[in-house]
Length: 250
Image 1: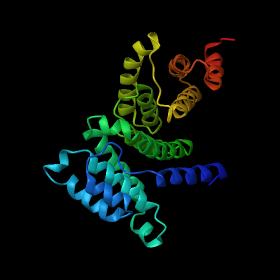
Image 2: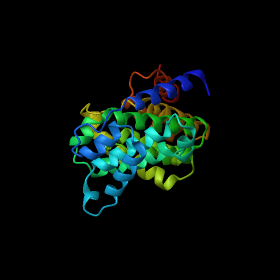
Image 3: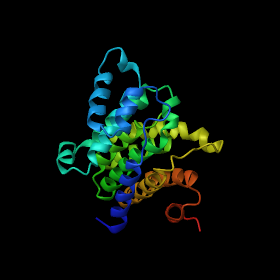
């Protein structure tokens, strides 16, 4: 692991460690257990509530379960860490259910914690994409999207690129077509809003895919991709150079 990646991981864990109880929550029992450091007990209770037909409609227990999973994953006790070695992945699953169930009030107040999970997932996507494991990158991109309430169509376009690069062209073209259709008016009206956490992934994905298409002799397709990239990222140096090279602009 590069030193920068190692330091980023340490900083991520430190930030997660500093996470307090659920902000804007109403479950005093879960808050008390969490604040007392009884993370496993809090997890069990939260999970019971998640599976209760009546209480399962509430979003708060899912967020507590996610937060407890992270705490147990990063425990100082090696035995606990061993028991919860898949804790981050499980935390994401709980958080995804929280995002789906919450009406937006608690969601809005707990963006710090959710952003930490998103950044962790982003790093996985980047690792797979850089290693040309595009199917895994697409899968984790879909997981990332489930941590967000609103659809980022530029990121959906990136997800489609990952599918296409993994030879899943049916899903890839579906995602890219949907993204293009929704981005069209946003570009015209200058209302495109990027998720800052994955913005660099998107621009790099567009650049890489255009290069790949051109290398395969599909210059027209490469131009179509980089043209959209130029509209989305007019000041990106790599995209501008690629756009000028393919279109003959100087």
